[in-house]
Amino acid sequence: MTPTDTAPKTIRPLVTRREFLGAGATVGLAGALTTTGCTVRTTEAATPLAYGGHANTISGLEDNIYTRLLGVRPHIGAHEHITTMGGSRMPPEILEAMVEANEYFVDMHELNEAAGARVAELMGAEAAIVTAGGFASLVLGSAACLTGLDLDRIRALPDVTWPKKNCLIQEAHRFSYDHAYRAAGMSNVYVESREQLRARIDETVAMLPALSAAERSSPIAPPRPIDRSSPPPDTVILPEEMIGIGKEFGVPVMIDMASDLPPWSNLRRFVDLGADLVVISGGKGLLAPQSTGILAGRRDLIEAARLHNAP
Image 1 (cartoon, rainbow, N blue to C red):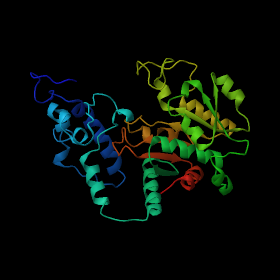
Image 2: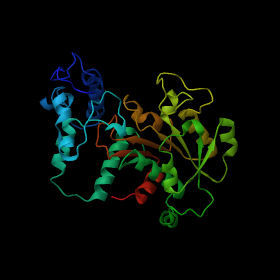
Image 3: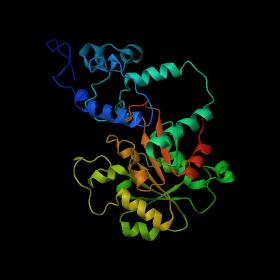
Image 4: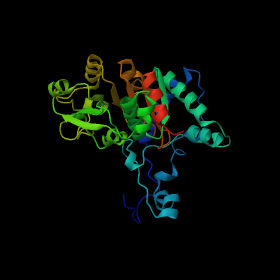
């Protein structure tokens, strides 16, 4: 948006996108936390005007910390939570918690275990770990599937010398971050159809990844289709079916649902369906810092991921 001399001083519709969508999301998250014993504080700072209010004005876009320090001009976030466009805004209560936490020193291993246990409780998973983002979760989950709890193999990564190292991917589940699997040391193997995928599973396959976004993808550009409401083609193996295939062949399935919150029921959905690992991005629907993510699932795989992780 380019301001003009006649442009209004503020951009303030009668009902903002934040007001329309935020109420349901805030209530959903608050409900998820309060029902498990976590108190969510609300403050006056959470009102729409205060919550990014100045950033929604022309003067705010022209004079802010980004323009002053780096000469980078922000934009109005009239889009969903896209990492490359800035992700999401953290609510005031999150910022308050970060400020308070900054005052203290804690053992990071102990903190990671406690935070993981809390996340696992909320998701109904055996275990969980907080990571440095959705991509980090993909790398750690892949590494865990490659090595298990074998310390020699953990030390060997990313140099994989054993045969069980393939990541078998249906083309419909490819996306811009699937090199995360290779970063862990896997070899990506691509197939087109469910028949080809089933036929290709052998003792060399270490993991089957799936995108939850494939449930709403077109064949043009998964996982970000032109029409988000269009159903996927019948040829796409949906996450639930992929989980079933993994169970049938004894291969771990990792579901990437990085951006599929809300609805908050998705926190438990793929765990309840039996996914071995579930990936969530912190900087999207969770409204957490951009540099956070979640990996949840089977206890042994999460423990292996923890051994690969840095505190």
